[in-house]
Image (tube, rainbow over all chains, first blue to last red; front, side, top):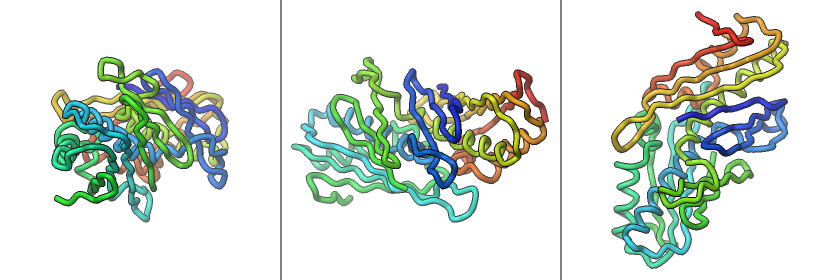
Length: 140
Length: 140
């Protein structure tokens, strides 16, 4: 797996990944022009995207009718440099005609078995999750 | 720090980060349409983008004249699920009128002190780096 960040000018870089391009940039107070997101948050985007794809794929295989789905990530950072991620909460919000036990199982399968980003981060970051189905929080 | 992956259809998600949008998607063999990169590699993009911004910023402060700069990331994944990252090599390629010791110091400052993504990954991923200046590899 390869990726590359190519400097354009100022604090702007073009990230190349899987044949696609993403612009990243700093905020004006750090010399940038905000032409794209900051790179650090992409770690959390990677996590929520990875588990999101797992879960939608598993729910499809379970023949559950998903009408809306999003996965949010809320990250805590260390106060001092290096400002590493200390904790990330992943919040699954799903709507549709879905069996709640199947949904919980789909999330567990991603967290424990499939999501390589979770598995990479877990030794150093406190990972927690919440599941909401049709506006109601599911509890274990 | 917050981010969100919003499911569009198929395996396509729109990632929201810092007020910007990135499309991620799976390959056709996994039910996607390749409308954007896979989410997993964004972890490595985050790492190379983060350290890239550190290094260009430090070189600017050191008044070094950078004419071209890119940071590549080459990642190894576990063979079995969950396919976590096991090793990432970060390759800095810099061109310009730059003092090689200052460049090495800039990279060290990012790796050891500033880059929160490196600090997050280091406990679980073997991180190594190479520095190339005007086509020549710098050695320690």
